[in-house]
Image (cartoon, rainbow over all chains, first blue to last red; front, side, top):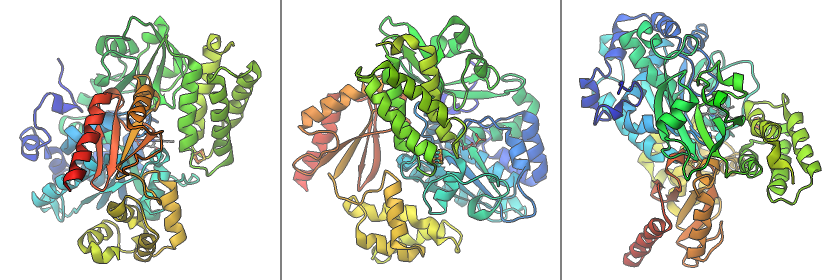
Length: 412
Length: 166
Ligand SMILES: Cc1cc2nc3c(=O)[nH]c(=O)nc-3n(C[C@H](O)[C@H](O)[C@H](O)COP(=O)(O)O)c2cc1C
Ligand code: SF4
Ligand code: FES
């Protein structure tokens, strides 16, 4: 077994205890950054590592940090712990079981962009995790690892948690900022982007939990070491959340570029009850449906390869669909979700998800004529490219790919 | 008044945000207010509006927007079963309907003793441990994973016993 880099609690018992984490080098990287590295040197190191955002878009992390406007202060860091994409449960395991590595990642990020205050935005359902993080933050303050003039250097940092209250859209970074500001969680018009105009109108870096959990190891062991995992364009490891029709669901940490087969068959031990695998949704409910051919199963899971089989890697929440599942039923499920979660700010998404959900419900109940399937397809096509944020676009992925690629499920 | 009843909590919440950003405290204050009766009362909205320097209408719209805030009372415990796609692929829909059948209520309803409201909710980030639900009550939110009807009814029975003793 190779060592886990993110799910390190699987190798090191009690790593969620501060003293155990420190015995394994915990907070050495933060101390090293604050006492021996210029902030820009930390940014350059993370750039060199090739780390890309694990929240969905795969944007280069170091590059994002470098965009932070240095003419406008203060700066903030907001960590995205909203984790609400159906099929995604990786950030939860990281925060619950390996919390200090995660917090150290937030802290190094804050140092790199010279923020003195960072927020962790957790979905409201993570109430217990937030209380636990509050206690751990207090422990770090008591140990002098968080607070004023850290390690004798001229740098001070505070961390705070902020709980959402049940709204998928708050995972979208600008809606998240609105939410922390005490407003409705609705996306902002962009540009400006958060690194120039973010929280309280100040330059802000927003990164996902898993993204930041990589950072302490990159600072400790170097960019070249990090690049020894994964592929050239998608370096490093990834936690894949595997769910649906699968024998062993759960989180699996694999290098980026591992194939769907390695994950689904190698780790998940395939689909149960003698069924056959029919489709794969690699990015949760926001995903296109991939037909589970041999070619698809042999496709590397990285940001470049998944689009070649007609989907995105996204949050890498792999939902496995077997041949007992009717795609009409599946569309009804996903559209019910998007109708519920549309924030209502723009018309194509608000009205579109409503009508698509309505149609899908009829189609799934077997009472619909072919014309209604065509209508659903046409409504979805019209939403494309017209939405203020990506949620609207996500809502049509399964619809278009499902109707195009699984025609046989739609003939009545 | 919220601030008088929970002075320490209120102070701690306000201290989480820059002094000129009082409005940011609205979400944590709503959770605090909801602790009492399981929903946010009109009076609490007024208190929060004053503390956050916003209008009561704005506070009410926050309550309406986010699904974990309520403006009406329900059962003492809200049992929120995830029936989203990954959980549904592992039997969540049948689980929910059997649970309701056992309790003699429909989804969205409350048991006659006022103890349990059953609801269907979206993904809770526990998809690998379906069927699963969370319970929301004055004590906060708790996850219950890898559930069977028997184990779920046991959880509810334990609440009933607790009620009797209280
Ligand atoms: C509707 C919607 C939901 C999102 N939900 C999440 C989420 O739950 N967690 C997350 O990290 N990013 C989520 N994102 C992506 C964020 O907007 C943002 O890109 C990300 O937090 C950036 O961090 P990263 O660069 O580290 O990935 C979501 C985006 C959209 C459009
Ligand atoms: S696309 Fe949907 S979720 Fe995004 S802003 Fe428009 S209505 Fe809101
Ligand atoms: S789908 Fe039910 S917890 Fe994710």
